[in-house]
Every structure is written in structure tokens, then in C-alpha cells.
Length: 298
Image (cartoon, rainbow, N blue to C red; front, top):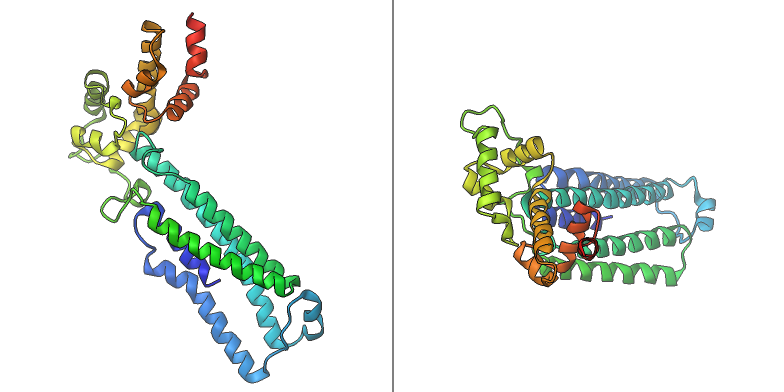
């Protein structure tokens, strides 16, 4: 259980750019401290129950207070495990949503494979530890120890290898205060829409495969939360989908006008960072793959 807050903080730091606040640390560790203190008090007044490694060994000592604390610890372990999996999933979905609002291409900025892998390792460790607590022998306890070692090595490796796109100086939109739409200092939607269309239609900023929302925001003289709200209110979408719609539209035009043109040249000129990203977004927006669209024109 001591690993759970640390693991959660690891995921939280990567997805938000900063570690958990002290209040969240207290909320996660306070129950563990109270359980530890309560366990010591029970041991002092009632003594320790014999060591048990399975459910069958627990039954004869069921009424012993110290064993009841162990059972409570077992259920807390399950609760912390569920919190870990659910909390990680929530952070992952929020992180994915933030990236879609800030970057036109996610694949070149961040990958989610590390998160899937570490969650899987944690689930394996959690299940093995629960099984060993209920009905485990020495080999099962050894598996728990080995899974714990592998999990910690994986956390250390991914913590070093994976670089978050966010930091305390550049936080995700979900961590920022909502934009105030009626502020006199903000550019009205009409003017912002005109400027944004100029950037997309005349300047064709979407041809830059590394285009980020901050690049557009600098031209529009606004802030991230207001710009994100503008896209949602006017275009009913997020930054990534909006930019990739322009890219796909240009790709369709190029295929129509130059049917013999190489697909690699097309997706590079349209601002896609990879063929997989190009194929994914082309089919998502048009309902057809680039090759299928090309065949229909011939």
C-alpha cells in the first residue's frame, strides 16, 4: 500500500507537469498512518496473533483483535488498488484531452505505451499480493516480491526515459482556471475567427507538423483557456481535430489534382508527422483511407 501514493504521484506528475499538492499526500497517507498506529496499539494491549498465510489459517483466530486489523489492512489494500487503477485511468483520459487541445500531433509529442505497461505491471502485482494474502504459499510470496521489484524498475526506467510535455510553467488546460469570456481585454469571437481563418487559409500554419496551440495563441493575442473555449463554441471541436481537418482537406485536394503524386509527399506537405497519423485522420474525417479515396477518383 505504501507504493500506491508514490505510483499515483508518478502518473500525476507525468500527466500534469507537477507533483501532487501536500493535501493530496496527506489524504493518501493519513489512513495508512492511522492504521499503523492502531495496529501498534492493538498489539500492545492484545498481543499478536500467529502468522497466517491463507484463509484457512485465519479462521481459528478470527476473533483476535490483531488479526481483525490485518483483515482491515487486506481490504484497505484492495481499496487502494482500485483507487490506483481508476485514478490512473482518469488521469490518462484527462491527459489525452489536454494534449488534443494543445498539440496538433500527439504521436510526436508523447506516447501512452509506458502508461499501459506500468498499469499492467501494477495490476499483476496487486492481484498476486491479494492472492498471496488469501491463500498463498512461499512461492506465491516470492512472485509478489519479484513483481514488486519489476514494477519499481519499470517506474524508475520510464520516469527517466519519458519526458512530459507539461511543466509547472506550462500546465495542462485542465489545471488552469476557466477563461472569462466577458472580459474587455479579450478579443471578440468575430475578430478572433477572422484572424484564425486568415492563419489557416492564407498562412496555412497547419503545414507545420509540430504546430501547437501556443503558436496560434501568440498570433491571436489571447490565452490558452479562451482559445480552447473559442474552438469549442465556434467550431465545436478541439485544436487537434480542427487543424487536422484542414490538413485532410488539403490532402484531398492534392489527390484530386495530382492522382499520381506519392502519398508520402502528400502527407508531409499537409503537415502530418507520419503516415500512420495521416491514414488515421484521413479515414476518421472522410470515412475512407487515402488509397480508397484515390481509387474512387480513378
